[in-house]
Amino acid sequence: MSKEKILAVLLGLAAAASTLLFVWLFCLEFYNYDNFVFSTYRINIYKFGFVAGIFPAIFMFYYLTRKKSDVSVKILAVIFCLVSLPIAIQAMGNLTARTASMFKGKDYIMQKSMQTMYGGDYKFMDFIKSYLKEGPDAVIMLPPNVPPWRHTGSTQIMNSYLYPATTTNSTESAAPYILISSETESAAYHLWPDFKVPADKIIIFNWEGGAPTIIENTDWDPEVWQDKKPWGLIIKKDE
Amino acid sequence: MNNITGTIALLSLAIPGFFLNLIILGEKRANEAAAISWLTGSIVFTLSIYIINVFFGIKLNLASALSTLVAITGTSFVFAKRNLALPKINFKSNLLVKLILVAVPLLIFITAFFYPVADWDAVTLFDFRARILLNEGFVVNKIIEMIYGGYPMYTSLLHFWVYLTGLWTPMPIYPLFTVSLAGGIFFVLRKFYSTRISLLISLAVIFVPRLFANSFIPYTNLPYTVLLMMGVFYIYLWTKSKNVSDLIFGLLLSAATFWVRDFPFALVNFVLVFLAIPVVKKYSKILSIAATIILVFVYFVPEFHTIANYLKYTVYEYYSPYWIVFSGVFIYKLIKKQKDWFWALAYLGYGTILFAGTYIFNTSIPGYYTAVFDAVQRMTIFINIPIILFATTLFLNKKDS
Image (cartoon, rainbow over all chains, first blue to last red; front, side):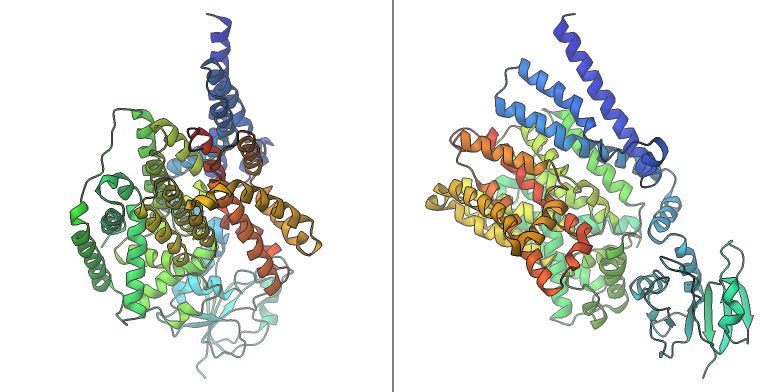
């Protein structure tokens, strides 16, 4: 085998190996979680993704030089490899991970997607939804839309999740439901509601997954609950 | 109604789209008509159900939406009857590449059926509006008054349609935009280049940063990009072919971007139409040089520096090395005295609108633009496509390039 052919084979192998390596790394990243590869292997694949295009670029340049192609074709081929291939490789990794996830079933993907978007809060929101009566009459008073209630205080998020029920941040509202939140997103703990509420039922969510605690005919007093950091729902007494 | 009926309903939007495309493009261009049939079908269908709902007060439900689809399909069929032709695909050459081009989009499409809507703007706006519409049957005040509601109803109506017909998730809608872009660009490029080169350029377009990833995100950035790019592409084709159908198609697709987002980038497409005039074309090189100098100069003007600097690191540096590719091709074409500057002007035009838009936005909400850098990057996923196409003009023969 001539030296030229050996060089071509070596370059081709290097191109294939770098491509496969990065497809695999990107696949791991998408399959597990954002930043998985860096936190596990200390490789920043987004920063060094261009490496995946280097060997194919050299190979392409070598191949086209041998064929005496026009200089513009050579330039474009190299540009294509360096600019587009890393993204193509990332896309292949993404697609491989999505295909692998597909075989784990819809429920697995659903849970993972919800976890990515809402953290664990979606379980709490599902719980709230299960206790609301159907229809737009179900109005829920939320905590103020400021930290630490970043999720539970957002009417945008809660409205879309709890639809057709509606939500409000107004403490003047005559909403028949009041959310209990001990969320601590970006600020110190502050139990909500921080005022007394005449309650028909206080339903406390169980984060461990067991049955909720239901307390009937006892008014909500934040001082009683302060140290328990509860999450749940108050169904107000008919006035 | 189940996932199968929902999938059929989603894909069936391609039928009126195909007929409409044939009416404009003619029977000899059935492949092009088929490639972006779903795109045009989805635009016309959603606009139609919006009009019957908002302007004629007809409640949106399965009966009214389906009747509208049947009416559009029937009417477009009657007008397309004279031009009716089926797309022809030659599987003899480049079989492996073509199989990959069929298999990959198919895989993207299939995997999408397993994913829920789980992205902020979609959950709180695009998808939420669809769910309200499903419940109420009308575009009610609740939808109109929604926060950041400056988005037209296009994608929300598509979500509505798939939910209505039984699909559990609207996610399979989005890969169809990527497929439309790849197919549309490929068949237009075939007029200028070999199959292999056209395939490679189409792939390079699909793999500009963030575009492919947006096939899995239920936002409006990808639909906007596809319409804007297909619009400018047909206008480019018109400057070459002088075929009026290309101009009409390009203008219609560009105008359709306003049904997706209220952004003004399509104005650049409209202005580029003037490049078909020989005098303007003659000076396109000088115009490109002047536009480049002005944009660079703007960066050093104290009044504009903050915004220009923000866009420099948020968009242009973020998308490196694309701007370097642009500069390289620009200089190469200057040295070689090439004549085709359409894509350079497109790129510079979009940049001008981006700068002006951000500047005006900053005057209305000072400083807020710095908080939405990710949104700016998502919004500008189209900005590198003209660079790819600018670079590919190097392949054109000397007369055209």
